[in-house]
Amino acid sequence: MTVIVNSIQNLGWVANFQTNQISQPFKIAEGEIDSKKAEIETSRKEYAEFIQSSNSIYQGAIPIQLVNKQTNSINIVAGVYYNLGTVNGKPLNGTPLASGGFNSNFSPKIWKVPGSSIVTPEQEAALKMRQSYSLPERQEANELVAVFMSLSRLAEGKKSVASMNDDVMFKQHFPKFAKGIGLDLSQSFTINGKSFTYSQGTLQTVDTED
Image (tube, rainbow, N blue to C red; front, top):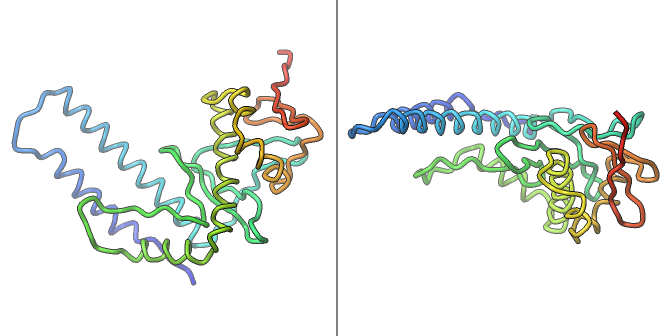
């Protein structure tokens, strides 16, 4: 079954919401107006990103393979629909979001309209997809996604190699994650251009000459 997200209707709600946000009856300072506009623009971008990632899930888009096996390298870009291996033989696909988090086919994110109690077709579709996987499958998917997000933060410089090595969850599941995506841990590999090795449960940075 193909589910098409009704982005036009929902974007209409976002437009109405934005209009209400900037048409308050009291006077606000110019700095506050700029701040409010920034908040609105951020909300608009987050919603557009959510729609795009959800469409990829519901319409069965072909994901990008995370690993370039010829160079044994990973390149993580927000907004790209990736395959992160399999769980119980079922493909684990999803998108790292610039707004934070990961939208996965095992647990699709649900966009909730603030102040609304109406259940939308998109929310029903997300719930049905989530329920199509068993609890153990969703737990394993969450573990693999957590490894991916740790690698993403490492590539962004938001997490250190030392903290990765102290992360029990990462150490436990990284080898399984690497095998699932085809990353060869017997040799050095790169993540967004940064070189690493992984041996005896320890991740290390590889110094490269300019």
